[in-house]
Image (tube, rainbow over all chains, first blue to last red; front, top):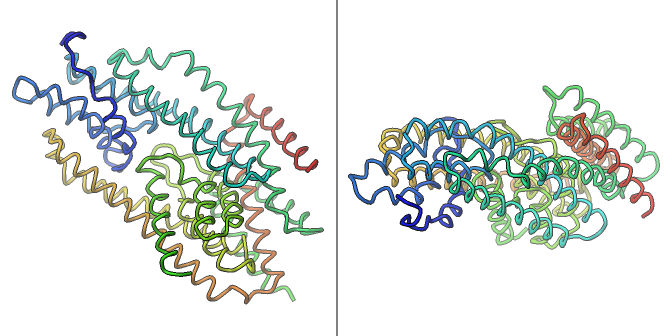
Length: 252
Length: 225
């Protein structure tokens, strides 16, 4: 189908479905089912003419195994749907999806999980510690989700625009720059937040209790750092609370 | 706590639990959001903010990549706020942290169970999926989301139940020294987890310098206040 005669793709509907992409996350196909659900509206044109075999085949492929960062799944959804419309052979569409898992996972983890999210939440922590209260939380939600929704929308549009040549989209300068800046900005924000929240939460401690807090926190950090293969923050917290409860009970 | 308020907390916890993985991942599942809103619902914003901050530090210890298993701190923070609020300041952060960490652990285990149930459902629907049946695909997806909603509701209910038990058996019954020790344990563990988790994200590259600059800047601001 030529570009001029191609109907307008229902990208909005697909975007809405992409917000649920992990709703059926499982150890069998990971995000595959959610990807298939999101891609399906973009494949409906394939039902026109023929016996619907192309449509059903594309829907089945769309639900195969997939795992990447949820906010960037739209890139693969758009690219795979566009490739199906362009008549790319099925095995090549499968290879395209498989090839996108690693890069989209890695990019999303660096950009969002290790960048944008801790950066904005660190700023929210600073806001709360400085006494801004609930408005700091609301600003966090608005700013974080502005970036979140923009990334999802960009990914879907870029995937649909480039199709099988979607690797071009991943080399966009703005994306590269955002990924490079996200890490240092996150480090600065969370670094600044830690002493401020320590002060905010330790207001009830006075005198030697503050010194004890510092000693236990440093000790806990050392245990978590060197025992990171087995020890988690949750386990450390439960162990320290159990020790505190025991100490409080034994203390004459 | 009156029943209506418990039901509102349960509904909020269910939304928060759904947001973590399923729908729509807009980060209401972050403790820094879940806690203050729970506090506001209870008319105790201060406790909500404090426990939201505390559990946000624990959250930094988690990087949710691939099939990794991790605790769920959203409903856990709501349960923690409920526990600390009900204790009317007699137990505070320590009791909240205890209830929240246990709930977080249960939440993490429940995620694993739901993922296994989803996998079984996918296996059962395998022939329809391979035939490209869109209705089977959408039905499978919708029921999985409902399964996650039920999971989130059960985890929140468990946490709120634990909070009630804690009020009943502990509030007012512990000496102030024990309360202070529990608070100290909770806060030091959260600070340790937050710092270690952040440093794992930052790594040894140039980000470490920015982290150091941030710590120095934050310390100066804290000292000046």
